[in-house]
Length: 75
Image (tube, rainbow, N blue to C red; front, side, top):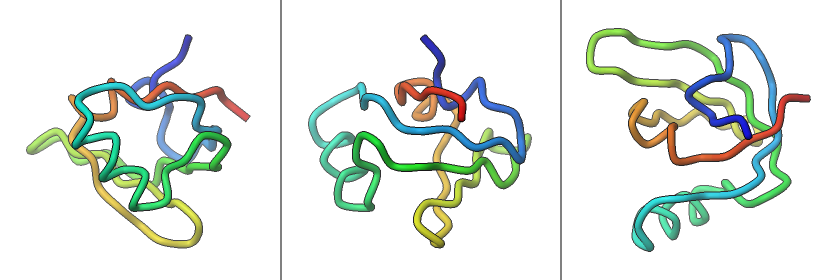
């Protein structure tokens, strides 16, 4: 089992499952993070612990603590 927080910068992966509270999962689904979606880790920002992602040609940012709740598989 691999989590989004473990994926290296520049690597792509496919979303398998979302963990966490219902509100968190709902918000990610609204942003287009549904199972089977391809993600790319664009960069990591060490100050503040942020992870920038590219999803369907859009960019969004998650905290590393939130990324630890997203299960992915490397592609």
